[in-house]
Length: 599
Image 1 (cartoon, rainbow, N blue to C red):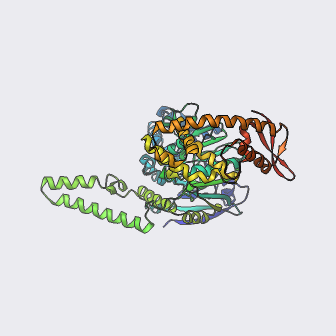
Image 2 (cartoon, one colour):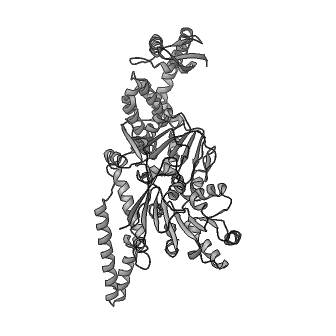
Image 3 (cartoon, rainbow, N blue to C red):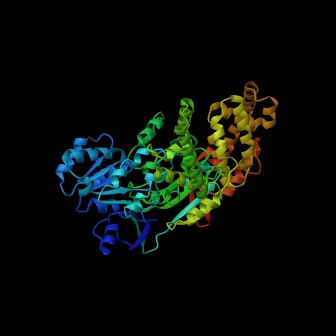
């Protein structure tokens, strides 16, 4: 069991200030340094320390950002040569600063050997954002490449604002403690949790509330792509992701994509490589949105204990708002902690038994078949090739199951956020007539007839919004149609539904010819009536005048009925946008619409 030692940090202090006040000039050795708060300057503290340091950083954007701020720091990642490392070692004897990805650590090791430097004795090794060794282990095995060397250093430490204490026994064997930097002041940040059955619609409702630049964190390129397709309002946007993600999105024209931080647009998407450590410098305080799309991408779950805190800490100047929009998936399969332990133990016993049987039997076919079975066992990923336990991969399994289990109910996720001292959470549940499953099913329809059947069912489900007296419902109806109607034929099909109704469409068995004929016949009459409506509306309203929404609605409804166009209850005031440029204005008695000009 790793022992915990606490040190307090005062408001306005950085990590180096707190350490010095407690009699420590530098980050101590053999600690898992739990900063609790992001942005306390742990890497800065080590870069400025008067000793040689190797800092392991999981992601390249962090290294690039630190190099821009510290000219004595060499960043090492793909493309940097070993001889560049060697030159840097020679240039800064006694106080050499190196920051390297786990995958490129071998270059440092090779350069040290070439230069005759004993890095284990002469350098301090710091593994930054150390929870990533566990969280990324299933898809990035090489992230733990420096670990065997790590324990050979005389001085070494892990650091993060959100560490996951590892079960690897080497930490206890080397006398590691958790050094927790406890804030001596209130530090909770408000977080708005929105659980929903339609993340796109929930996002569409939240975006107008965002008055600053919007930063959307979502761990799925496919989800980002889907949002671009379904939300026309996401113009003036940028995506920050890996080079592989850029390659996946490159087929779309006029898309701003970067693998490192550049100037932000109005809307900005960030994938997981930007969740932690990297500083996102913006003059304004942005609106931050965390997005989890369980039905489109299960990997988009976000851990309240770690990732949510790290995301909030990317903005050194603070933020205007923090919102997590997520779907909930009760059918999501996840084990609890005891089930994970039981599975690992029973799987280990099964593998041991198979290996023992393969050794005992002399028949070649029997022996080889058992060995093949052992090699293909799922449990193999939780051990190294030499058969020893891979504790980091096992911890990864535990963490994945823990986080998945939170997303099976809104209460579980809300309680998880409430248990995190970093957040002051509020919860809203938003349910819509069209769901995430509907959105995905719509994209999967290949047969034209099946698509028509599917669209008609969706038209019927949202019809009540069209005639609702609530302006928000009518806006929602318009948004739904904008997403549903993705082709000219879809629009014609919808026109037929409006003019002839669902029963007619079913009676003609969704046939193209009948649908087209019905629209053409209705079109001549409707066009004539709309021209009459336009003349009436332009006579009724004057440019420069201001009207209440209720007055506009009454006048428009009367005009629709006069020319014989279908209307149920009343016409929305926003229909005036079809004929005039309008803007909202605030008057003492409330909010009004002012006619600015004709279209």
